[in-house]
Length: 146
Length: 146
DNA sequence: ACAATTATGGATATATTTGTCTTTTATTAT
DNA sequence: ATAATAAAAGACAAATATATCCATAATTGT
Ligand code: FES
Ligand code: FES
Image (cartoon, rainbow over the protein chains, first blue to last red):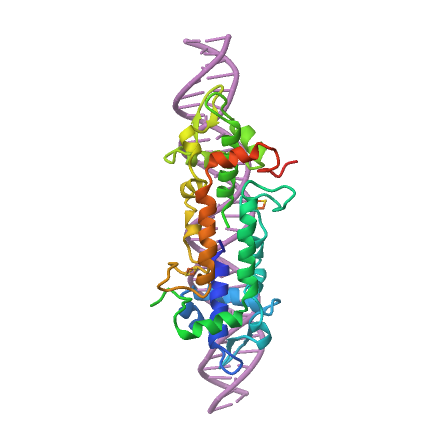
């Protein structure tokens, strides 16, 4: 459904939201090992999320690392998709027509539009903060490591 | 959601189901122009669908082309996904964990599993034949061309 | 000031996907 | 038999996604 880059982006962001704050920034090494992703590739992704899109914040130097502002924590997961230019998945025609619309619907449109609506809600209605909060009981996972 | 290859595979198959039969085989040129896809790339895809996976049939030479057996027409759209090795989309974790399961669920699993179920049903419950049939009123589209 | 730390940025490498072009093989009609 | 037709097959090209490595810049603590 999503690219590896976007999958890592979501997992990394949730991890940062959960573990980091302005006084306890998280290094890229901890992040990538904790979510089981390639370190340097993940670093690039975090740059995207921190650069113009202000989803995560970072500082360099000792005790530097990544964290999220309380404002950013309120963003929906969909903000990550948008930053990664993969929000299109929530708009596209499921069989690849240039435009998904009621005017020129594909044979799967009628059923798929209902599913797509739920996908949009899934990524729109939950904030990053809420997801991170839900993780704190230890019964949810964002890594493959044991 | 799906690769271009799979999108073309679905559109091409629906087109063949709708227009072709054993006595009226459809050429790759007509198919690719009719569904607005790159011809030779589409040809390769149709080879996959006709080779070991017997979703479409073909014959060479004059009056040759592609068609579907009545047996193949009864297959669900999901058979195309399987042939294209993209059935995984209906099984994978939405944020890329190696395994989507109740045992080690990701933070989006609880909600996403309901959506995934509907996706599976969408591709499982409708046969290729039914989709092709529904297209015959002319109000559904599988092309970008006007 | 200096050394250590950590993100940033750039260059490069590899793999996969997508797409094109040419040749070959099978089939049909004459 | 021969020529025409159309898919099959293979070689190649381009674009994109994924991943690694190294140098640079910013920050901190001493
Ligand atoms: S037109 Fe295909 S999903 Fe809407
Ligand atoms: S574990 Fe992530 S969707 Fe099921």
